[in-house]
Image (cartoon, rainbow, N blue to C red; front, side):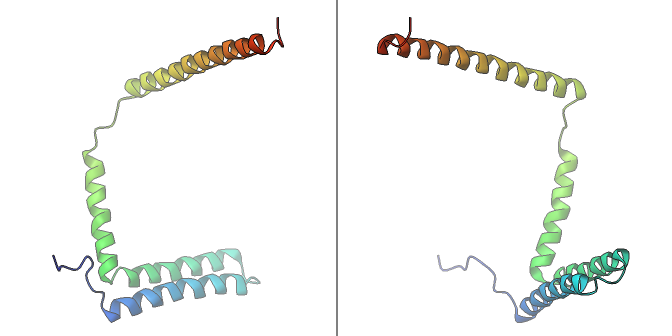
Length: 125
């Protein structure tokens, strides 16, 4: 029971993560600093900086794990059996109907309890 819960992260990975965050911060600062340039150019530059930061981040162990998880998730989504249009409509109508019935029951319960309280306190007739 002496196993570590997390793998130790290498110094190179930490440096890459810090540089990735630094690239994004500098890119955002440059986006606002160079406000006299066209918005199109600033957005393209920001997208390029974020792409470089993501590329650098994907070279770390954490980045590789996130990428593997993304690919596995994509495979799992393909295995999902999605409901047909008729099943979706039927389920939606059932939910609307139940919400209406529960709302009606709660409204009637509230009305009768209010009526009973008024009778008990002598405020109604």
